[in-house]
Image 1: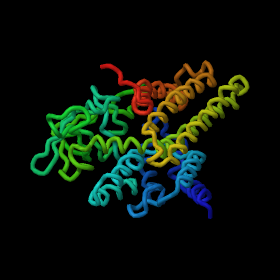
Image 2: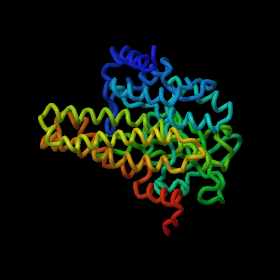
Image 3: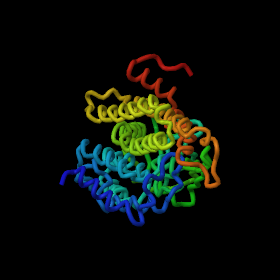
Image 4: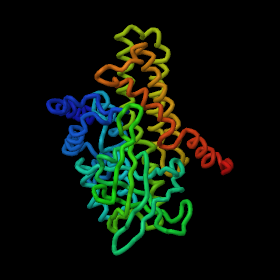
Length: 379
Protein backbone atom coordinates (compact mmCIF):
# COMPACT_ATOMS: atom_id res chain seq x y z
CA UNK A 1 0.00 0.00 0.00
CA UNK A 2 1.41 3.40 -0.92
CA UNK A 3 1.71 5.99 1.81
CA UNK A 4 -0.88 8.24 0.16
CA UNK A 5 -3.37 5.39 0.03
CA UNK A 6 -2.62 4.53 3.66
CA UNK A 7 -3.36 8.11 4.75
CA UNK A 8 -6.49 8.39 2.60
CA UNK A 9 -7.86 5.07 3.81
CA UNK A 10 -7.24 5.83 7.49
CA UNK A 11 -8.92 9.23 7.28
CA UNK A 12 -11.91 7.80 5.41
CA UNK A 13 -12.31 5.14 8.10
CA UNK A 14 -11.92 7.49 11.06
CA UNK A 15 -13.57 10.81 10.08
CA UNK A 16 -16.93 9.08 10.49
CA UNK A 17 -19.24 8.18 13.33
CA UNK A 18 -18.49 10.27 16.41
CA UNK A 19 -15.86 12.25 14.49
CA UNK A 20 -18.05 13.03 11.46
CA UNK A 21 -19.11 16.45 12.85
CA UNK A 22 -15.46 17.56 12.77
CA UNK A 23 -15.13 17.61 8.98
CA UNK A 24 -14.16 21.12 7.89
CA UNK A 25 -14.31 22.66 11.38
CA UNK A 26 -12.02 24.67 13.64
CA UNK A 27 -10.56 27.18 11.19
CA UNK A 28 -9.73 30.86 11.84
CA UNK A 29 -12.31 32.43 14.10
CA UNK A 30 -13.85 29.01 14.65
CA UNK A 31 -11.50 27.66 17.32
CA UNK A 32 -14.50 27.29 19.66
CA UNK A 33 -16.02 24.55 17.50
CA UNK A 34 -16.16 21.04 18.97
CA UNK A 35 -13.27 21.60 21.38
CA UNK A 36 -13.80 18.39 23.35
CA UNK A 37 -14.29 16.32 20.21
CA UNK A 38 -11.25 17.85 18.51
CA UNK A 39 -9.22 17.01 21.61
CA UNK A 40 -10.43 13.42 21.32
CA UNK A 41 -9.54 13.53 17.61
CA UNK A 42 -5.99 14.57 18.54
CA UNK A 43 -5.73 11.42 20.63
CA UNK A 44 -7.19 9.36 17.79
CA UNK A 45 -4.44 10.72 15.52
CA UNK A 46 -1.94 9.75 18.19
CA UNK A 47 -3.22 6.19 18.35
CA UNK A 48 -2.94 6.01 14.58
CA UNK A 49 0.67 7.19 14.63
CA UNK A 50 -0.06 10.40 12.70
CA UNK A 51 1.46 12.81 15.22
CA UNK A 52 5.18 13.46 14.91
CA UNK A 53 5.40 12.05 11.40
CA UNK A 54 8.72 13.75 10.73
CA UNK A 55 10.18 13.20 14.18
CA UNK A 56 13.09 10.73 14.42
CA UNK A 57 12.10 7.17 15.17
CA UNK A 58 14.31 7.04 18.27
CA UNK A 59 12.02 9.57 20.01
CA UNK A 60 8.78 7.92 18.93
CA UNK A 61 8.22 9.57 15.55
CA UNK A 62 7.86 7.84 12.20
CA UNK A 63 10.88 9.44 10.54
CA UNK A 64 8.74 10.22 7.51
CA UNK A 65 10.33 11.92 4.53
CA UNK A 66 9.38 15.46 3.57
CA UNK A 67 7.48 14.00 0.61
CA UNK A 68 5.39 11.79 2.89
CA UNK A 69 4.74 14.66 5.30
CA UNK A 70 3.50 16.78 2.40
CA UNK A 71 1.32 13.89 1.26
CA UNK A 72 -0.25 13.63 4.71
CA UNK A 73 -1.12 17.34 4.76
CA UNK A 74 -2.58 17.16 1.25
CA UNK A 75 -4.79 14.20 2.07
CA UNK A 76 -5.80 15.69 5.40
CA UNK A 77 -7.01 18.79 3.59
CA UNK A 78 -8.89 16.79 0.97
CA UNK A 79 -10.63 14.77 3.70
CA UNK A 80 -11.71 17.93 5.53
CA UNK A 81 -9.67 17.13 8.62
CA UNK A 82 -10.41 19.59 11.46
CA UNK A 83 -7.95 22.30 12.48
CA UNK A 84 -5.41 20.73 14.78
CA UNK A 85 -5.69 21.58 18.45
CA UNK A 86 -2.27 20.13 19.27
CA UNK A 87 -0.15 21.86 16.64
CA UNK A 88 1.83 23.93 19.15
CA UNK A 89 3.09 20.74 20.73
CA UNK A 90 3.76 18.74 17.59
CA UNK A 91 5.21 21.48 15.40
CA UNK A 92 6.95 23.75 17.92
CA UNK A 93 7.45 22.41 21.45
CA UNK A 94 8.28 18.85 20.38
CA UNK A 95 10.91 19.66 17.72
CA UNK A 96 12.52 22.20 20.09
CA UNK A 97 12.78 19.64 22.89
CA UNK A 98 14.22 17.12 20.42
CA UNK A 99 16.82 19.63 19.24
CA UNK A 100 17.79 21.31 22.51
CA UNK A 101 16.35 19.28 25.39
CA UNK A 102 17.91 16.63 27.62
CA UNK A 103 17.02 12.95 27.48
CA UNK A 104 14.91 13.53 30.59
CA UNK A 105 12.97 16.26 28.76
CA UNK A 106 12.35 13.93 25.84
CA UNK A 107 11.22 11.08 28.07
CA UNK A 108 8.87 13.33 30.03
CA UNK A 109 7.27 15.53 27.37
CA UNK A 110 7.39 13.86 23.96
CA UNK A 111 5.07 10.90 24.75
CA UNK A 112 2.23 13.23 25.78
CA UNK A 113 2.56 15.22 22.55
CA UNK A 114 2.69 12.06 20.43
CA UNK A 115 -0.38 10.66 22.18
CA UNK A 116 -2.32 13.93 21.93
CA UNK A 117 -2.91 13.91 25.68
CA UNK A 118 -0.93 17.06 26.58
CA UNK A 119 -1.55 20.38 24.82
CA UNK A 120 0.86 23.32 24.64
CA UNK A 121 0.83 27.09 24.21
CA UNK A 122 3.54 29.64 23.47
CA UNK A 123 4.60 32.24 26.05
CA UNK A 124 6.52 34.70 23.90
CA UNK A 125 4.68 38.00 23.23
CA UNK A 126 4.09 40.54 26.01
CA UNK A 127 2.24 43.89 26.08
CA UNK A 128 5.55 45.71 25.60
CA UNK A 129 7.29 42.98 23.62
CA UNK A 130 5.19 41.82 20.71
CA UNK A 131 7.36 41.51 17.66
CA UNK A 132 10.43 42.50 19.72
CA UNK A 133 10.97 39.30 21.68
CA UNK A 134 14.25 40.55 23.19
CA UNK A 135 12.29 43.14 25.19
CA UNK A 136 10.47 40.57 27.38
CA UNK A 137 10.09 41.52 31.03
CA UNK A 138 8.60 38.32 32.45
CA UNK A 139 11.15 37.19 35.00
CA UNK A 140 12.04 33.91 36.67
CA UNK A 141 14.14 33.26 39.75
CA UNK A 142 15.64 29.93 40.79
CA UNK A 143 14.82 29.24 44.43
CA UNK A 144 14.88 25.98 46.37
CA UNK A 145 15.07 23.79 43.27
CA UNK A 146 12.35 25.52 41.28
CA UNK A 147 11.89 28.44 38.90
CA UNK A 148 9.46 31.07 40.19
CA UNK A 149 7.91 32.89 37.22
CA UNK A 150 6.17 36.27 37.33
CA UNK A 151 5.00 38.43 34.45
CA UNK A 152 2.43 38.71 31.68
CA UNK A 153 2.12 37.18 28.23
CA UNK A 154 -0.43 38.16 25.61
CA UNK A 155 -1.94 36.83 22.35
CA UNK A 156 -1.34 33.34 23.70
CA UNK A 157 -3.20 31.01 21.34
CA UNK A 158 -5.29 28.28 23.01
CA UNK A 159 -3.81 29.01 26.46
CA UNK A 160 -7.23 28.24 27.95
CA UNK A 161 -6.89 24.66 26.73
CA UNK A 162 -3.16 24.09 27.23
CA UNK A 163 -1.54 21.87 29.85
CA UNK A 164 1.93 23.40 29.36
CA UNK A 165 3.44 26.65 28.17
CA UNK A 166 6.96 27.21 26.84
CA UNK A 167 7.92 30.57 28.32
CA UNK A 168 10.70 33.00 27.51
CA UNK A 169 11.64 34.68 30.80
CA UNK A 170 14.50 36.87 32.01
CA UNK A 171 16.47 34.85 34.55
CA UNK A 172 19.44 37.22 34.88
CA UNK A 173 18.14 40.38 36.62
CA UNK A 174 20.92 42.58 35.27
CA UNK A 175 20.67 41.43 31.66
CA UNK A 176 19.34 43.35 28.69
CA UNK A 177 17.98 42.43 25.29
CA UNK A 178 18.97 38.94 24.05
CA UNK A 179 21.17 38.07 27.02
CA UNK A 180 19.97 36.52 30.24
CA UNK A 181 16.81 34.88 28.85
CA UNK A 182 15.81 31.28 29.52
CA UNK A 183 13.40 28.87 27.82
CA UNK A 184 11.19 27.36 30.54
CA UNK A 185 8.50 24.68 30.44
CA UNK A 186 5.74 25.75 32.80
CA UNK A 187 2.61 23.80 33.83
CA UNK A 188 -0.59 25.79 33.30
CA UNK A 189 -2.76 24.08 35.93
CA UNK A 190 -1.49 25.78 39.09
CA UNK A 191 -2.57 28.66 41.35
CA UNK A 192 0.10 31.01 39.97
CA UNK A 193 -1.31 31.02 36.42
CA UNK A 194 -4.35 33.02 35.34
CA UNK A 195 -5.73 32.94 31.79
CA UNK A 196 -8.00 35.74 30.56
CA UNK A 197 -9.61 35.39 27.13
CA UNK A 198 -9.33 38.20 24.58
CA UNK A 199 -12.61 38.57 22.70
CA UNK A 200 -11.95 39.00 18.97
CA UNK A 201 -13.99 40.54 16.17
CA UNK A 202 -15.50 37.11 15.61
CA UNK A 203 -16.82 37.05 19.19
CA UNK A 204 -14.62 34.08 20.02
CA UNK A 205 -11.41 33.87 22.03
CA UNK A 206 -8.54 31.89 20.55
CA UNK A 207 -6.08 34.42 21.98
CA UNK A 208 -5.55 35.03 25.68
CA UNK A 209 -3.67 37.05 28.25
CA UNK A 210 -1.69 34.87 30.64
CA UNK A 211 -0.57 36.17 34.04
CA UNK A 212 2.16 34.41 35.98
CA UNK A 213 2.21 35.31 39.67
CA UNK A 214 4.99 33.32 41.30
CA UNK A 215 4.11 30.32 39.12
CA UNK A 216 6.45 27.40 39.73
CA UNK A 217 8.20 24.84 37.55
CA UNK A 218 11.01 22.44 38.57
CA UNK A 219 14.58 23.61 38.06
CA UNK A 220 15.19 20.93 35.42
CA UNK A 221 12.40 22.33 33.20
CA UNK A 222 14.76 24.70 31.42
CA UNK A 223 15.60 23.80 27.82
CA UNK A 224 19.22 24.61 27.05
CA UNK A 225 21.35 26.33 29.64
CA UNK A 226 19.92 29.11 31.84
CA UNK A 227 20.55 32.37 30.03
CA UNK A 228 20.67 30.61 26.63
CA UNK A 229 16.97 31.07 25.94
CA UNK A 230 17.39 33.37 22.95
CA UNK A 231 19.22 30.67 20.98
CA UNK A 232 16.55 28.09 21.84
CA UNK A 233 13.73 30.53 21.05
CA UNK A 234 15.21 31.29 17.64
CA UNK A 235 15.62 27.58 17.02
CA UNK A 236 11.93 27.08 17.74
CA UNK A 237 10.94 29.85 15.33
CA UNK A 238 12.99 28.15 12.62
CA UNK A 239 10.67 25.14 12.86
CA UNK A 240 7.84 27.39 11.60
CA UNK A 241 9.52 27.83 8.23
CA UNK A 242 8.45 24.62 6.52
CA UNK A 243 6.33 21.73 7.72
CA UNK A 244 4.44 24.03 10.12
CA UNK A 245 3.52 26.23 7.14
CA UNK A 246 2.43 23.19 5.17
CA UNK A 247 0.18 22.18 8.04
CA UNK A 248 -1.29 25.67 8.05
CA UNK A 249 -2.11 25.27 4.38
CA UNK A 250 -4.47 22.41 5.26
CA UNK A 251 -6.83 25.12 6.46
CA UNK A 252 -6.00 27.50 3.62
CA UNK A 253 -6.84 24.87 1.02
CA UNK A 254 -10.13 24.02 2.68
CA UNK A 255 -11.09 27.70 2.92
CA UNK A 256 -10.26 28.32 -0.73
CA UNK A 257 -12.31 25.29 -1.76
CA UNK A 258 -15.29 26.68 0.17
CA UNK A 259 -15.03 30.02 -1.62
CA UNK A 260 -14.71 28.28 -5.00
CA UNK A 261 -17.71 26.06 -4.29
CA UNK A 262 -19.80 29.09 -3.32
CA UNK A 263 -18.85 30.91 -6.54
CA UNK A 264 -19.93 27.92 -8.60
CA UNK A 265 -23.18 27.45 -6.71
CA UNK A 266 -24.38 31.08 -6.63
CA UNK A 267 -23.48 31.91 -10.23
CA UNK A 268 -20.63 34.35 -9.53
CA UNK A 269 -17.78 32.18 -10.84
CA UNK A 270 -17.43 34.03 -14.14
CA UNK A 271 -17.50 37.42 -12.44
CA UNK A 272 -14.70 36.44 -10.08
CA UNK A 273 -12.84 33.91 -12.23
CA UNK A 274 -9.68 36.00 -12.52
CA UNK A 275 -9.47 36.59 -8.76
CA UNK A 276 -10.20 32.94 -8.04
CA UNK A 277 -7.41 31.81 -10.39
CA UNK A 278 -5.01 34.39 -8.95
CA UNK A 279 -5.80 33.23 -5.41
CA UNK A 280 -5.27 29.59 -6.39
CA UNK A 281 -1.92 30.50 -7.93
CA UNK A 282 -0.93 32.28 -4.72
CA UNK A 283 -1.72 29.15 -2.72
CA UNK A 284 0.63 27.16 -4.95
CA UNK A 285 3.34 29.77 -4.35
CA UNK A 286 2.94 29.33 -0.59
CA UNK A 287 3.23 25.58 -0.92
CA UNK A 288 6.30 25.65 -3.13
CA UNK A 289 8.00 28.29 -0.99
CA UNK A 290 7.56 26.01 2.01
CA UNK A 291 8.91 23.06 0.04
CA UNK A 292 11.89 25.10 -1.16
CA UNK A 293 12.86 26.08 2.35
CA UNK A 294 12.42 22.52 3.58
CA UNK A 295 14.72 21.30 0.84
CA UNK A 296 17.50 23.68 1.90
CA UNK A 297 20.13 22.65 4.44
CA UNK A 298 21.77 24.75 7.13
CA UNK A 299 24.59 25.85 4.82
CA UNK A 300 22.17 27.30 2.26
CA UNK A 301 19.72 28.79 4.75
CA UNK A 302 19.38 32.58 4.68
CA UNK A 303 18.05 32.71 8.23
CA UNK A 304 14.94 34.60 7.14
CA UNK A 305 12.82 31.79 5.67
CA UNK A 306 10.20 32.06 8.41
CA UNK A 307 9.97 35.82 7.85
CA UNK A 308 9.54 35.37 4.09
CA UNK A 309 6.85 32.75 4.62
CA UNK A 310 4.93 35.02 7.00
CA UNK A 311 5.22 37.95 4.60
CA UNK A 312 3.78 35.76 1.83
CA UNK A 313 0.89 34.01 3.55
CA UNK A 314 -0.51 36.85 5.69
CA UNK A 315 -1.61 39.21 2.84
CA UNK A 316 -2.67 36.21 0.73
CA UNK A 317 -4.97 35.02 3.52
CA UNK A 318 -6.42 38.51 3.95
CA UNK A 319 -7.21 38.67 0.24
CA UNK A 320 -8.91 35.28 0.48
CA UNK A 321 -11.18 36.66 3.21
CA UNK A 322 -12.00 39.68 1.05
CA UNK A 323 -12.71 37.43 -1.94
CA UNK A 324 -15.04 35.31 0.19
CA UNK A 325 -17.15 38.37 1.02
CA UNK A 326 -17.18 39.53 -2.61
CA UNK A 327 -18.33 36.12 -3.83
CA UNK A 328 -21.02 35.92 -1.13
CA UNK A 329 -22.32 39.34 -2.19
CA UNK A 330 -24.69 41.56 -0.15
CA UNK A 331 -25.79 38.69 2.17
CA UNK A 332 -22.21 38.65 3.53
CA UNK A 333 -22.99 41.86 5.44
CA UNK A 334 -25.79 40.22 7.40
CA UNK A 335 -25.44 37.97 10.43
CA UNK A 336 -27.98 35.18 10.77
CA UNK A 337 -29.60 34.31 14.12
CA UNK A 338 -27.25 31.31 14.25
CA UNK A 339 -24.23 33.62 14.20
CA UNK A 340 -21.37 34.23 11.79
CA UNK A 341 -20.90 31.87 8.86
CA UNK A 342 -17.51 30.18 8.34
CA UNK A 343 -16.64 32.63 5.55
CA UNK A 344 -17.66 35.65 7.64
CA UNK A 345 -15.42 34.30 10.41
CA UNK A 346 -12.64 33.93 7.85
CA UNK A 347 -12.93 37.55 6.72
CA UNK A 348 -13.00 39.02 10.23
CA UNK A 349 -10.18 36.85 11.58
CA UNK A 350 -7.85 37.53 8.66
CA UNK A 351 -7.87 41.27 9.43
CA UNK A 352 -5.26 40.41 12.08
CA UNK A 353 -3.03 38.24 9.88
CA UNK A 354 -0.57 40.99 8.97
CA UNK A 355 -0.18 41.96 12.64
CA UNK A 356 0.06 38.85 14.83
CA UNK A 357 3.12 36.64 14.78
CA UNK A 358 5.21 39.66 13.83
CA UNK A 359 3.70 42.43 11.72
CA UNK A 360 4.51 42.69 8.02
CA UNK A 361 6.53 45.82 8.73
CA UNK A 362 8.68 43.93 11.22
CA UNK A 363 9.14 41.02 8.79
CA UNK A 364 10.43 43.42 6.14
CA UNK A 365 12.84 44.99 8.62
CA UNK A 366 14.19 41.60 9.69
CA UNK A 367 14.72 40.50 6.08
CA UNK A 368 16.42 43.80 5.24
CA UNK A 369 18.72 43.68 8.26
CA UNK A 370 19.60 39.96 8.37
CA UNK A 371 19.66 39.09 4.70
CA UNK A 372 20.49 42.35 2.93
CA UNK A 373 22.66 43.68 5.81
CA UNK A 374 20.93 47.05 5.73
CA UNK A 375 21.19 49.41 8.73
CA UNK A 376 18.80 48.84 11.63
CA UNK A 377 15.88 51.19 12.19
CA UNK A 378 16.63 54.04 14.53
CA UNK A 379 14.80 53.76 17.89
